[in-house]
Length: 167
Image: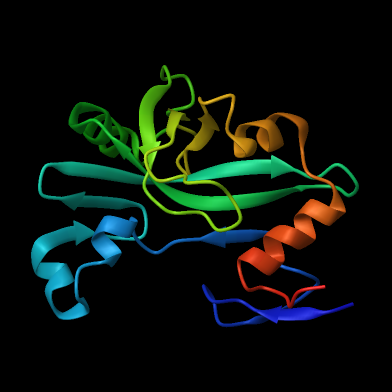
């Protein structure tokens, strides 16, 4: 069994990574480090960059050959009213709210372009990040989200993210 060093908590975990996340939307991450906090307001869940609004969400790909899922912790750009509605519900259960529209704000390795990919966002309880469903049924990640991924595809994702070496 292998182990990996978690880039989020700094601890070593047994097994292989089952998630990958981004600290910021790509557009905000591209701002030079010394200027970023002057140009955008952000924490680990919310980001505002000018008149653009982002929420960190979870896109789950169920495993077909083992329990659980691979989770992509991506940022999603949403409309301003939806952003502020999420802020209102941040400490509450928002799972009964109607889904909102958004667009993925990170380039995800191992896929055709994902920046701007349309999604629906479903708020969750106060202890869970919003869940997203890919709207573009012709995109490979939508099929994987619907049908799941086998161990070979899981390995391909780990290679694409730099979590493990190639074949």
